[in-house]
Image (cartoon, rainbow, N blue to C red; front, side, top):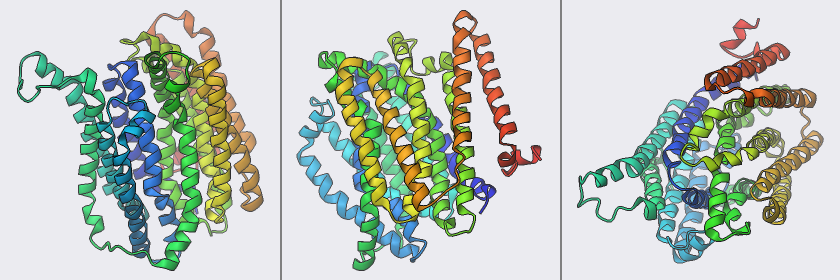
Length: 500
């Protein structure tokens, strides 16, 4: 197994993930014109969708990759898809009955019908999850990439249509009969999630060919083995999602002001959180190629050494992403539409903390390979549950005192614990020679560069000069990494031939 092999397999998944995420992140400035309160409502509902996605898909993607090593992939696909249908159908019906309660939970009690749209989105995405996994396992990245990118283009186009085109048509008296009742202020959530619904529906239609040979099958003995494997993963997923979204879901409830005031503050946090979440692009791009790769090559003799080398390169890439956000905040604050809502710049204080927590999240994802390979997913579940408890307790205690800054520190404390616990236990059950010192050095150098730049950048008025200084600093880090880890980078395709 080699780094080149992983890089080659990851390239298309990485390109599709980065490109689709990049296009999707254009939604941020497009919807950024909307109020902080709407930002808070949107984040709360997306948080609920994220939690339900974990339940609906029931960890079947990872389970599919794991069991395809030992069984017929077609049989595993049938069982995994049937499991999703078996779980999703009664859950959708139940949540439809209690949609008002769900709306109250996510702070949109006056718009319960949006919950119906959200449930359809979740259902379509859950059904599409296994065909996407099948493509990854079959190594068909081009179709995977095309559909992923098309999904976000449709979503982005429709959101732009609702937020910009429809108000313009309404203002200028065009299509008045069709736009009768159109109200962006009161129905923004409906329009945003309707765009998502159309994109998810078209995506599922494009995947119908993957279901040609599907039959509803469970195969009792094998299904039981898969459930025993996946149940802890569901707990891991739910715990991980709590770590990611609990703050945005509960912030409006835990702050000490009125609901409207709390949503306003939550909106500031949500917009700055989106800057920190940019680094998730790197993590997800890595995950698309790495997960099936880890599973397929885990039995090779030098697997542990390769995992350690992959970790080094992963941390370097994440540090570059961190600097790309921190060193160019002058540009990113326009991205979150601080030009229209200047109060959003107050939230920058949480961005460095959140970025570090996201890097730790990525490190944890790399470390977690051991409990999946060793069938000890119950240990991963326990680590994640403790992490979730840290998140919940920290937020409940400190949000009333520190506001949204507490959310950032809670995230860092949670992932810090999970990284340490997973590393120590992993070395016991599946030893990997991670270079911990080198990882610390990369992160320390990245933050050192940020602190140096931040110490004098305030005295420079020219935006162009500030950007050029940022380019110089990020180039310095890249050169440092290439020299310090020359051996690892020389093993990569394209760039490697320049370092030999």
